[in-house]
Structure formats: structure tokens, C-alpha cells
Length: 499
Ligand SMILES: Nc1nc2c(ncn2[C@@H]2O[C@H](COP(=O)(O)OP(=O)(O)OP(=O)(O)O)[C@@H](O)[C@H]2O)c(=O)[nH]1
Image (tube, rainbow, N blue to C red; front, side, top):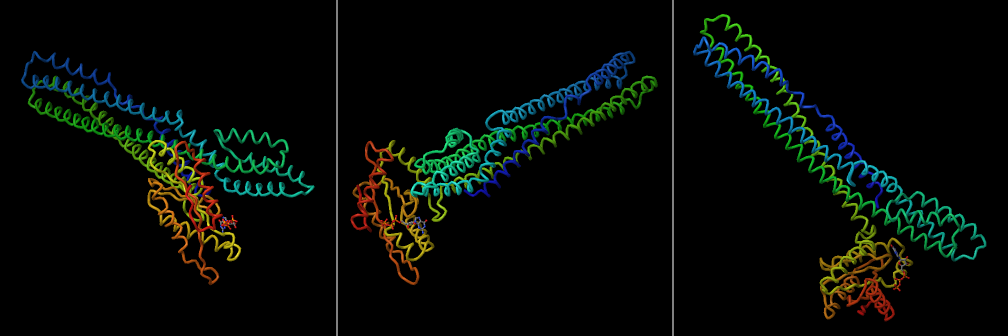
């Protein structure tokens, strides 16, 4: 449990969420694209343009006919232009709705940033002091044991003080879910001074609850991140498609404006030979009006382009946030692994063993393939500590752990169960062949060339093992292995007993 890492990760998550919220706020205030089109103005001018040409049919000049034909063409193009504007507007609206939907799902569901922030806050509050609190709990456990074994007349006052310190500590633990509920109950119990026999048990329970609480919060964070990842994926998908579609429509739009300008200059060329000054002046005036509409339209196209760029920027931001969320998720996985690793030997600890044993046991119930549990205990380890010091003892533990891990097959599993005890799980091995790998473990440990204080030292292990048998629970198999270990010790150590 590295609290510094926890805090860094939580900071990162908070910043991811803050950025996500900034993007979502941006999405809530999009430029309304529906105001981009001035429909009545364009259609009014069009009808005037038509009236002018149909009225001038009487003069029936080729150029005028051609201009009338162009006028129809122009009308169709303008209609197409308007349609594409409408289509784009609807499309933006749809995309914005989808993005907003994704955003509000984030807010409403268990995967919402607000809840995530609360979750973060809860973990930050707890995570920052977990290690410290666990340390304090261990101290209090020691005090509880002292109170229990000493016949000191003062113990009542010590008991009272211990209960109040425990109560204070429980108040510092902010966990939700079942752990939080049990802590509330304990807090109430602690309002009264508990019998001294109860106190060590209560301390151990509080240590268990703290570890359980950390795991629970981690699990929640992982679920939150998984949901966040999916929502971001969707939001990114929509933003990208909106950008691509918007870009295609923008291009089409731009081309149509070009066509209209081209047709207008054709009209001007064809009218160049016309003698009717009045007609020419009127047409010139309307042509100018159309040019103004076109220039207005170009302005709209430029707006559209800005919108498309904004969409691209948004898609990029969402992609960045997604990348950060993924990075955070990976770190969380790594952190989670650390919870199950023994800091001294770097192999799995008891919690790691519990998790794996549960998994293998369920597998065994399903497929019935042989599963062996072996308990390994270093012989006379107290003597090593006493004679050569604790540092030598620690070194021996590290070397033995490494040797066990190296000697086992990939599919087998070893954990430091506590103190100088190790647990090994061997899979797919029957009773007749079980002795061989266990003997190999014993021999490999025995052959480690330890040297402490210039002396060659041989360290041995005793092993008790059993196979899971029909009707076994994890506990019943474990107890059988423990009895076997007891027999191995009593039979003189440095040996293996299989029950
Ligand atoms: N150096 C070191 N010693 C540890 C650690 N954990 C437990 N021990 C020591 O392991 C020793 C275990 O001693 P005992 O339970 O009496 O057993 P033993 O001396 O190995 O004797 P047998 O098991 O009966 O062969 C104790 O002295 C503990 O202090 C650790 O992390 N580091």
C-alpha cells in the first residue's frame, strides 16, 4: 500500500475528470447552427428574379431565355444549398444530443465524474492515512495484548484509554459499503469500555476491515474507470463522425457556392450584347443582390468551417482524456497487484494466496483435476535470528522465497503465508508423483550456500502437504496440510509428510 502512489493516481484521476467536465461544459454551449440560414431573404429574392424573367418573355431574346434557364438552375442549386444547410444543422443537433446524452449518462450513472470525484475524495481521505492507520492499529493491538497478559492494577485505566484511541481511529476510517456499516457498529460499541479479552480481537478485526475497505474502494474505482472508458469511447466516436460528416458537407457547400458564382458570370456574359438598357439595369441590380447573398453565404460557410474545426478539437480532447484514463487504469492495475505482494520477499503475500486459493478451489470443484496444497516452514528460524540478527533472517527469507519460486513450475503458485511460513499450490499432480516436486523444493532450499558472520549455514524446511479430496472445503484441506506439517516437525524436521 504505497500511499504516495495512491495520492498521485487520485490527483491524476481528478485532473482527468476536471478536463472531461470542461469538454462537457463546452458541449453544453454550442453555437446554434440553426441561425446560420436566412431562408425568407433568399427565397424572396429568388421569386423577384423569376418574375423579372417571366415578365420579359415577350422580348424573347435568346440571351433572356438563357438567363431564364439559368434562373431555374440557380433556384435548384440554391435549394440544394439550403437543404445541405438544414441537413448539417440537423446533424449537428443530433451529434450534440448524443454527446450531451453521453455526458449526462456520465453524470447520472455510477460512472459519472461527480460520483467519481466523491469516490476520489473518499479514497483520498482514506488513502492518505491508511498506512498510518494500519501502523497505529498494530500498535494498539500490541497494547491490547499487553493489557491482557499483565496483571497490572492500572489496566482498567489503560483499557479505557485504548477504547478511546480505537474510537478516534475508527472515526478516521472513511469507507463506504459493508465495511463502512461494520465500522459504524464498532464505533458505537467503543462508546462503552469493552472487556480486555475482547480488545485484541477487535484490533485484528479493524485491521482486516481496513484492508477490506481499501480493496472495496479500489474495486469501485476500477469499475468507475471501466465505465468512463466506454463513455469516452462513445463520445470520441460521435465527435469524430460529426467532424467527418461536417467536413464533407462543408466541402459540398463550398463547391455549390462556386457553381452559383460561375453561373452568375455566365449570365453577365450572355447579357453583354443586350440593347435593352432598362432590362439590363434591372437584371444587374438583381444579379448584385444575388452576389450579396453569395457573399453572405461565404460568411456562413466560413462559420461552418469554424464549427468543423471545433469538432475536430473536441474529438482530439476526448481522445487525450481517454488516453489519460487508460494510463490511470493501468497504474491502478499495478497498484492492485502491489496489494498482494509481500514487500520483503516480493512474492505473493497471504492476501494474494487467499485470492488464488479461492480461484483454484473453484476450478477444482468444476473440473476435479488434482490440486495440492503444501505448507512449508523454515526449521529453527528463531535460532538464525537470534544468532545472526534479524537482517540475516530477512536475507534468508528473501533467498528462500526466490529459490522456491525458481524451482516451481509456471502453473504452480507460492506465497509467503506469514513469518517464516510459505504456502505452495501444485496443480494437476497426482498422489504418486507428489513427492518428487516437494522433495526438490526441500533439497533446493537446503543447498542454498548461506554465509552469516563468516560461517557457512545450512537452512532446512519442513513440509506438510495434502491433495484436495471429495467434500473438502478450503479450510478442511488447509487443516490437513497443517497437521502434516506438524508431523514433519515432530518427526525431526527437514522432511515431507503428505496426508
Ligand atoms: N528476520 C525475520 N524473522 C521473522 C520474520 N517473520 C517471522 N520471523 C521470525 O521467525 C521465527 C519463527 O520462530 P518459531 O515460530 O519459534 O519457529 P522456528 O524457530 O522456525 O522453529 P520450528 O518452526 O519449530 O522449526 C521468530 O523468531 C520470528 O521472529 C521476518 O519477516 N523476518
